[in-house]
Length: 399
Image (cartoon, rainbow, N blue to C red; front, side, top):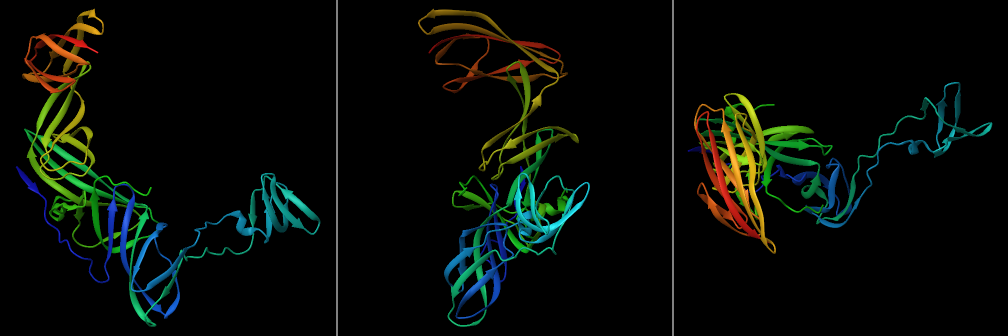
């Protein structure tokens, strides 16, 4: 087994550095520093924060905060023109007047000739556009003295999320796993030269291909409360949009398995996680061909993983109920038969995991079985090359 999970430096935030701690649920913990010219008492106009900042989570180091007043974010609308003189063009003529109301029936204009209601207009024009105020919140503070000072802000914001995606190449019993973190920024703000920390695991909220050389930057996951964190080395520019970063590179043993599901034989890849793997979609390739995808759940080191890839083309199955009897009150007897035919030129084995209801016991079976839990048993059916195989068993159960 060969696995690559290189350690990134984990420590306190350096002076002047911005850090983003990102969660899969679309939440970010932002820690950053800003310089202000302070008086002994005053109001700071805060701007340049993410669009969906959770202002109630804001904490500030460097001043005593007396109050915080978030301002309502306003986009432009026709209401901005109320009380202004505008021109409204219809199919046949133009009207000029003061906009007094915006109703479902149309625009209400006060003109020298009186009130006019204009509907089905083509366009309108008015006074010069005024940019909305960039101020997002007012922070009332007290400081020890008036001076230029660096303040540290810490807050939660929505609009930044990340997910893990995996490319897995399977060949001759070996799986080569390449994991990447896909970071999505839709906060309305670009971040420059930031330290990025990724948190893997489920939290309850308050509500381009990379070169293989880049995989040398892959970080080691470390515990963070009941989750795991990945401190990505270096500083990154996180503009609005998508950023793909290296996360995991590993090579380890894996097994191809055939399993009966209803009357289909599915193909799966089974392996043991060589390290902690955050949840994400895994796309599997064999000999350069995409063969299927499945989801890897949040998985601790050493836990088993199965990737279900699809139905096996050259393995066919049939289920037959040979006999069914009611022996008494809520007591039943059933004989089941499974037939499998193979067009493969090599022998394989097919797992049949059977669901058994109620209180049951197997009276007879043509193959041995393993009890998985209170309601399931597993048979392993050997199938010859270009051959057929059969399993028959009788089970008695009671509800």
